[in-house]
Image (cartoon, rainbow, N blue to C red; front, top):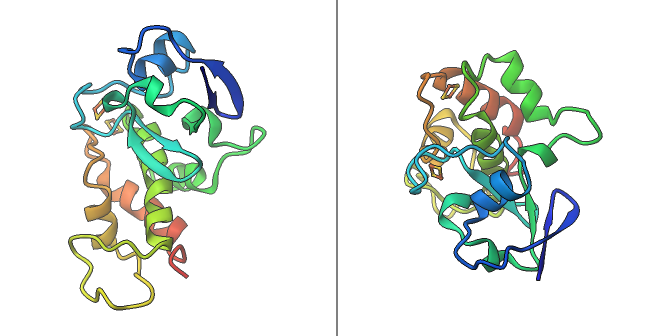
Length: 169
Ligand code: FES
Ligand code: FES
């Protein structure tokens, strides 16, 4: 039984009770994935499945993702070059301690995929529109599952809004 992590094949643990988060952090030594609450409430552990679907790895069993491709923050930068969203976080001061940042970035990339598929949010006004504009209110609502204990929200929203403003087009 195997799983692909950031482009490399890894063995799944024999113990089916191991969470995807613990597989990444404890077994594969990828500390970029953060354990905040370990119960689905903070978003710090967010990773991407098959390139675009965002999930909370603390609520997922590793064996559930056999044969799937997982991307953690360690796999976001291409060949040492920061993803444009990572650069935007730096330019907009989108973090202080940085503990929530890996989850914020993975979650925002997944959010942009949802926007491309025109998945509405609680604050989307026109459900029949062919595209959804990524306003700051849309960002706040769609990223509300990712908490930042430092309160760096203004920079986070600015970075995501700037980077994905054209995501729905
Ligand atoms: S550690 Fe997974 S949501 Fe908080
Ligand atoms: S930057 Fe510290 S928790 Fe978000």
